Length: 248
Image 1: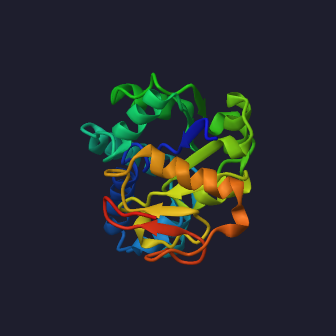
Image 2 (image 1 turned 60 degrees about the horizontal axis):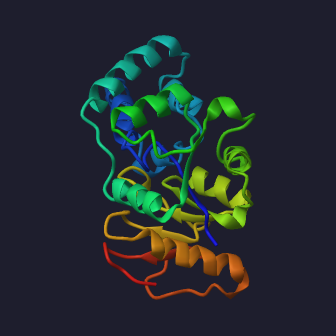
């Protein structure tokens, strides 16, 4: 029986990925660099400030850049774009559903705690989360399983008692490495990628009830080998719920 839901933060609860991408895109454009959506999406989920983003620009220019100056400028622009951000569709309903059902809530994020807690408080969603595992709490962030293992230890439950919601390939890999059932919810940036390791894929959380996801997770944990492909499934293992009210 599912006792807890563990959610990623960036790109799953709050669309921080689009402002992050736009702030970098503006810098790249100034230097004549264009990065494909798929290539950019592949950088996400492992760090709040991925070294690869700087390396892309350095390879293009053929020289080292002042990373600290770029970081300060880009971060300021990102915060400007985030000022009016709100929770992504379906997130508040999922959280309310979990609270009503007595399903415990946790966060597992590769970002720093100040970033996660600050934004959760700003959009009024901090209180429901019993556990918040962030970059400072582990030796390795996603795709390593450390964040999810830390969240599980804090909750005091085994993997088969929890369900995960993720928006990035790195995040899904981390959840699966921790032995968890994982629902992928690609955002506007990561939708360009395939999610072969996800157990279930939805285009949005809006229009879906928590009970749908719990039912799928319980079935997975009871008999993992019996999972079969459904109509409209995703690449390889992941099954897909299409539209807002798709069924299994």
